[in-house]
Length: 121
Image (tube, rainbow, N blue to C red):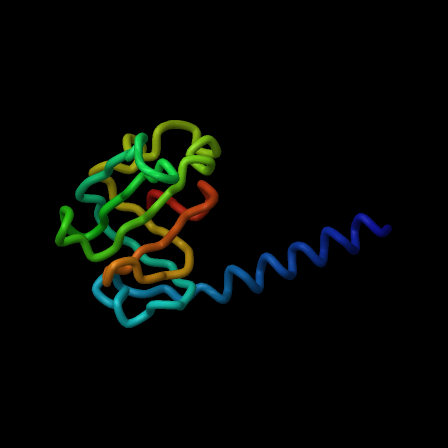
């Protein structure tokens, strides 16, 4: 019985987390810094910076660097959670990303910690 109650609690919390995501247009990301959102767009370029601090994978949406509208960042330890190389899986595809928009050097980005945060519609 305790397991059922715990599972029900987890489902409720998960549902609240999902409903807290605001679906926005890619062109609106700069107006939503600090918000948890769901946003979709075309990937124009990807790059795995294996020798950089944190070993980030960068996924540029809405334009090529430095004119991208949003950058999705996957740090090294989280790459292992994906079923392949994120820079290959998502390159040149339309994707949807869920997460909190933060500003880095004047540009919006979403840091992804789990594969479930990115989907291919």
